[in-house]
Structures are given as C-alpha cells and as structure tokens.
Length: 136
Image 1: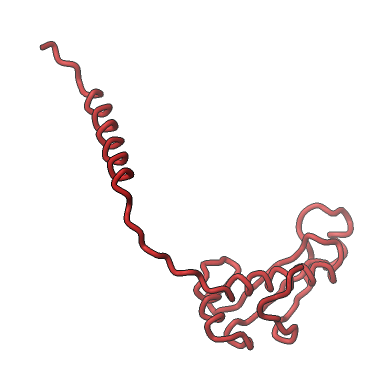
Image 2: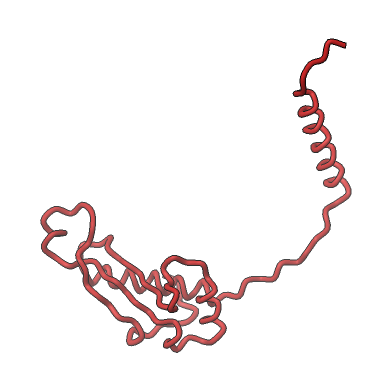
C-alpha cells in the first residue's frame, strides 16, 4: 500500500458495527461484522484546501452535512472490515489532496476542422437523400 499523502487520525473517525447483508449463512445472521465509518470533514484536522476539494466532490458517500459514510462488509471479521473502511477513506482523501492540473485550452488544427466539416457535409447529404422520392 502506498504511503498516504495526508495521514488520517483514527480519533476523528467513528465506527459502528452493523450486520452485513448478502450471502454468508448463519454467520451473517449472528455476527455484526460489517462496519459503518463516519468521518466529519468540517471537524477534521485536514488542511482547508483539502476539505474544500472533498466537499466539492460529487460522491454519494459524502452527506449534505459534510460527513463521509463508508460501509465495509466484504470481509468476515469486523477488524478486517474496519481496516478496509479506513483504507477506502484514505484513498478518498488522497484523491482530494492532489490538486487537479488546470486545463490548457488548445485550438483545433486546420486539418481537423476540414475533416469535421467534410463529415458534417457527408451526414447532411445522407439525410437529404432520405426525403420523399419525386416522380420528376
């Protein structure tokens, strides 16, 4: 696993044990092995620009209040699911820690403009030929 860009503190996370869904036989019905991880972005010790980028993400795991909720239930043990949830949160924070490179606007080449117009003319001709056939 690569070194995290911004290490997270476990004290800022809250965990809730819940029952996992899906297949698993009696183990699923008896044991609360799935984990809900909750991480409040506003109350965290993350740098302000990272907080803004996280809150700006269009991710369904981030609530309107700015709380990240991650559900981990792929492993059989609660501790493994806890580690998985922390790793997924770390990946989310690391993705927001890297600033997006600004796009440099470029102009299309003359040849690409010519190809585009030729394609449009060809499509126009095809569509013109779809009209009604006259007797003249």
